[in-house]
Image 1 (cartoon, rainbow, N blue to C red):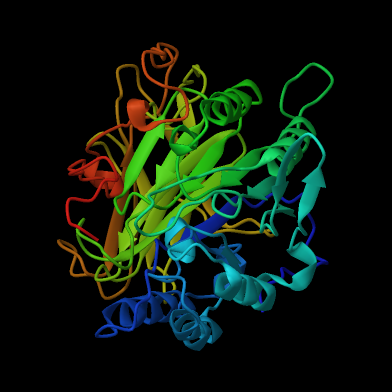
Image 2: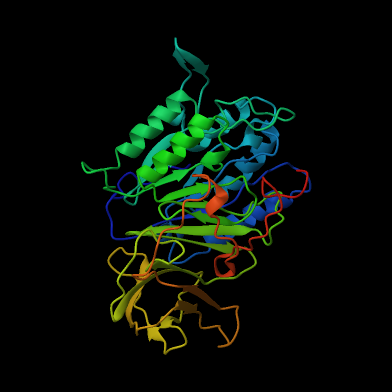
Length: 419
């Protein structure tokens, strides 16, 4: 069901891009979660020229079922055939609400295949480990590591959360990340990690510190998460920690999905509500100052790259600096996914906008038009101060409405209700 075409080359000019659909929490009560998930997949299926020409996969970040029950996973089995892209799944704490992951394991084998299941591990000096569900893939030139924070712990309803990697997965994670580095310790290819929550939520202090330290030292580009129920970006100057609004138990606004890209040395992220019609624009280069990892000297002309998603060919895609004149961008060619162009960048400029419009646009307001706006990083960029806990939300960017961030989380698990 989910494997990528094995003949797709790992090295390509196109950006790495995927869809993050937040925690489904399928429970069978009223069917709203299932209905919304089905609608999100159908919305993606309408993309042209084809979803696979624009995006690599759909990511479900755990909490697939509210109580980890077989009947709830059956709801997901009903919906997944409508996915227009390969699907990648991981486990969340709700997938072992009753202290058992047998039903999740059955689903994992069906969706990801039995070969990706990691069998039980024993070591005379360490606690035995149960079957686990973590794996790695090379996708569009990015090393993708999908983690299991739940199998090795004791978490269940009434006992609380107990996120753990376990010694075998921790050692595997270290090997995998170090393998992305060159002889001088610099990344030779980007690395993205997919896990249910922040490293700071791991139960053991040693695992929290070692995991967050590993991510920073190896310059992991992206950690994509669920769990919080809210859109949130936290950037420590090296790694972007990103969480997307949940489909189930959502209190953050319209359900939808995040579009995420790694394009060269730039990581970008933006949320698309389901009730926002196509087109959708994500600027993939240059980097916004809030997501940058290094200062950049901005020349008199700025190269621009943008991913445009739509269910019909846009009538025009164009960019401009501040409130200046519009400059047309060229459509993708040669296997690239991005619209490209160059725009003059006068001294003192601040914002870069990219607009996509359909022939149906009235010239004033959506629908039929979308706009992404960033503030390109310049030579005056400095990394955030390291005042908070590494691998946590201490570096949260807060409200950023252009990217879909409201910044109004209500509690330590980012949800104010008693889910």
